[in-house]
Length: 307
Image (cartoon, rainbow, N blue to C red; front, side, top):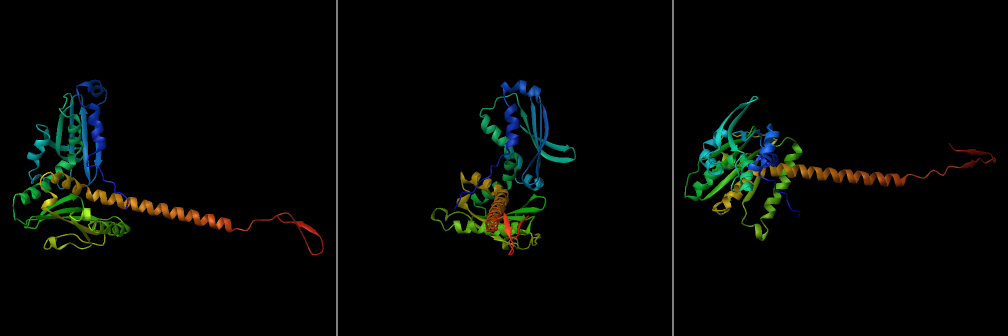
């Protein structure tokens, strides 16, 4: 069984932009290379990067921001970007919800960590609902209140504490093509089979359904032939202590991870089909009788040449 590729939670382009400009030794580069760029990310997220002289700003537009903001977002962001969180604003018709403002002339104590935090701005924002629910369960809360986050324009994320120390995370996923849903069904069965491995028996259980799971009973949930529901049953051991951040990152990247591997599977199948067609054409070409050419004679002895 081949290893799966895990997508990075950061944005490489944003990291490169700030890496080129951050620090007291980059003054000449900053003076010659001002930038004002729009940068897209997963989950319908849009960034606006503005760097002028020593001032750098990173704005973000994120679906469902209003619901995420209620989950203690700003106090958490202040711990990661102390004194740098600023308001959003409308830029060229796009409403950006929040920003990080950076003094590019200063040298951070840990430049690599600072850059990683900048390029993971989306990840840190979207982690707030998970952190709120996981911390509440860790603290002994028995609440079963559902948390609903419309994390994409047409898809929703649900966080449901069960009241007994675990949390069910449900992704509503819309598939653009009918074949994608079939491949996803096969792909996700591998998660169930993987739990039979002795080393993975304690991993969260994963289920894939084409109708809304029982945890969403009573909610107005969109269903249809192109919609699937992926549920993760997270026990306290999966998010206690130091495991919390890794689990949040894995869950936040899961939807993109799934679609990435669906596309990889389709690419692999197309390659195999093209190779098979090429092989069959070679067989057909070898089966063609060779033309002998040359002169032919009739029964009377006259000769003629086949053209």
